Length: 196
Image (cartoon, rainbow, N blue to C red):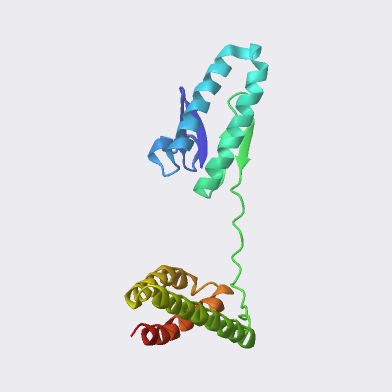
């Protein structure tokens, strides 16, 4: 592909030299930002070449910007881009960046499940939840009424349930979540026995 300037517009041509068909960059799938940058560069390059040798500093900037845009164009299009620097007249060929090599996915062995430690944490958490729920229900039933103890147990269960549901797949926390869920379910036997 060749990057050219016609008038004050950037055009892209396929291989084939001067006889190749020229296309406006806005018609290609290179993105509006790159197409706009190419046209702006072409306008500035045309203005610098018309000003002659007085704009030596600007000529270096235009040359550098042209190489940058050619590199971006080569990366987006995935093909080699050739252009003649409008200021220096030097032909520049920019190759597309190399594509990263596709590596096959690594075969990783999953970590062993820590059953003994996990079940110990679950059992401790279940016992803690059972004791807490029964203490709550018994204290409220003795001090006020059994219906209020039932409502308090329902509120605690409803408040804890979303957190348990969200934590069920978190690697380390899941053991405590499993224990709390079992303890919550088991405590309802005692809560109902206390209330009724």
